[in-house]
Length: 435
Image (cartoon, rainbow, N blue to C red; front, top):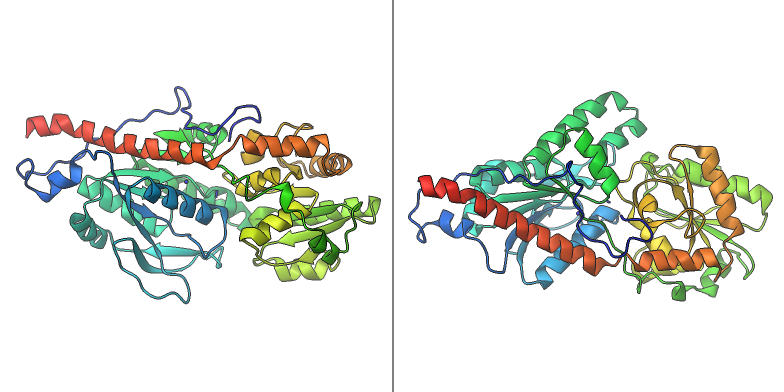
């Protein structure tokens, strides 16, 4: 499911976009094996109630990003619900090979534009042989790389139900790497990939409408959630703030994310520089790593670049800050937005993705029109003025996050996966009758 409803919309759920988003199960081949005797019959029988799932992702912990962490959480939920899930992912640098019932680590390599991430690789024929043995009811693809493409091709050839996430905005990424001319080719590739899926899940209604207008089909919205017990204002740490040279009355501006061009780190740093000229005690902390870190550290020596953080330590960093600036325009969602809201920070973001869905401008955060850098700085100025601990804006931020709980999201995801299997099975009935 890197990686939304309005601030007053209540819990996350699967949302259909009327007219634009319809599930049309494709017809699949049936096996000539006698009913109840052949492997294909066992493979295609509607599961009650357990589903065997091959879960394909090209990013997974220990990689730290919104897509990998969402995949890990979804996998944990599906297994906890009793489903039999095999994780299929590329082997990361330094990892041993693994081929077990629970996990298969494939070959792979670094993504050219983003070398800290990896793509996976497997021959469709090899996947078909595996799935003839393991007989999954569903192949779910979380990322759109070569491994995901091969998995969908193999599943279609075997008549296995399929689903996919639109989790990474590769068309949007291309323009940040001076590859804008390739954007139509990338979009065409993604359309062909998602055309192989019985259902494609997107994290926001706005993205569903955008993709439907570009010719994507069978889209459904499954949002994202946040663990509001883990990310909480109660984790504020005065000792940590002291290491930032921030007193009780000082404000700390935080940015969390991969330090890469598509995250628009430059605007976050420029925003801090502008506000610091107006408020000399303002501090800034940047959590994350990536290709831009060394250059940014040299250009902004007064900013604390602390590298990647995770778990309880990351939650303490959020809770110990006061403002959160996130100027990315390339995210499909932006999980860090919900983490900042849950931590009770005064959020500054463009009116897109998670922020557009969960933040009410001036009430639970401060938003700017997408792409308007001056408006973004102005929004940060408004947020700073309303960033006192315990103030109305920060309380409302926390309340907005509480409406986006993971349980509702993951149960909706589980239901849609079951429905995908059921719809594919129903589509086989006419074929079986004619056999």
